[in-house]
Length: 109
Image (tube, rainbow, N blue to C red; front, side, top):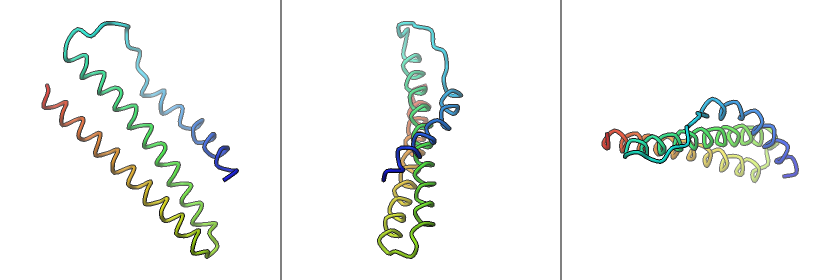
């Protein structure tokens, strides 16, 4: 567990360019209509989706590392399997949430 902080620090530093790609300069304005609210929700959703995917990728890599270093220990393999399943569930939930937001956005437009 002592190595998690350096690993997460490296993953976060490697993920910063991904967040920079999604960054957009938004002029400071008051919402003019419903389209502005929809655009804000879309931007926030895209940013959160990117963050969840990066975090899930980090957990997938860490789970793979735990599988490799388990050394045949049943408890370590079970822990790595649980982490892998949870990371994949996170990816599925993120994709489903993004799809739901896109469906609602399409209905509102």
